[in-house]
Amino acid sequence: EIVLTQSPGTLSLSPGERATLSCRASQSVSSIYLAWYQQKPGQAPRLLIYGASTRATGIPDRFSGSGSGTDFTLTISRLEPEDFAVYYCQQYGSSPPMSSFGQGTKLEIK
Amino acid sequence: EVQLVQSGAEVKKSGESLKISCKGSGYSFTSYWIGWVRQMPGKGLELMGIIYPSDSDTRYSPSFQGQVTISADMSISTAYLQWSSLKASDSAMYYCARRQGAMVPFDYWGQGTLVSVSS
Image (cartoon, rainbow over all chains, first blue to last red; front, side):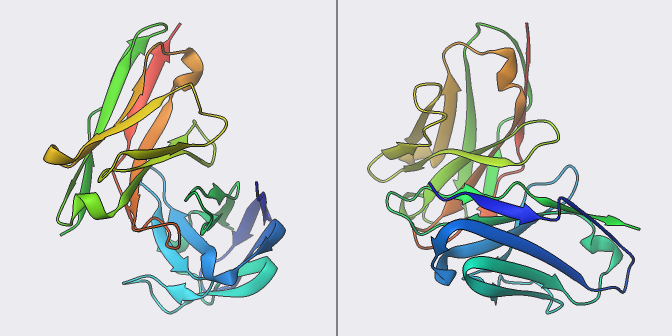
């Protein structure tokens, strides 16, 4: 089973700043099969990025994903107040179609 | 509009049984896997298992094998997650989510069902 480790656990930044969130896999993951989700308090997760770098429908272009192999990054270029939330990475693409999530990074207002 | 609508919050006692539901609409229910995801209070996301409603092919994560049962009724576009004997540690938010196959992520999620189990 692939284990995803996200860092940092908590990131404290101010609106307008740039956020860089990391997701490291215990073994190589095809970049085609790496996703990022955003979860706000009291809400279900929302798909942000899939295929490591493709934004899901309706996701603003301040969100970008990159990486390959075992190291992946979610970048938010200029933080808006609504971006403060918990972010999870997920690897998928295995057969059978199970998948694992990282433990999450909480992005909080400084 | 794609929607996954889950059943309402439940308050149960240890040892009781429970079945919660997830009804899909706005898409071909039989063409997508439905996964169940647990989120314990203040914790992260854990995939419990997934089902393909068209043929009821069901897979469980090792941690949840034997602990829950996932099923689906494609005639009413509904997937289910059930417990035969709840434990206090089953208290959590449970989400359903759909994915078209192994090579795509979960793109739509239900609103969640909160399960509270008292000992």
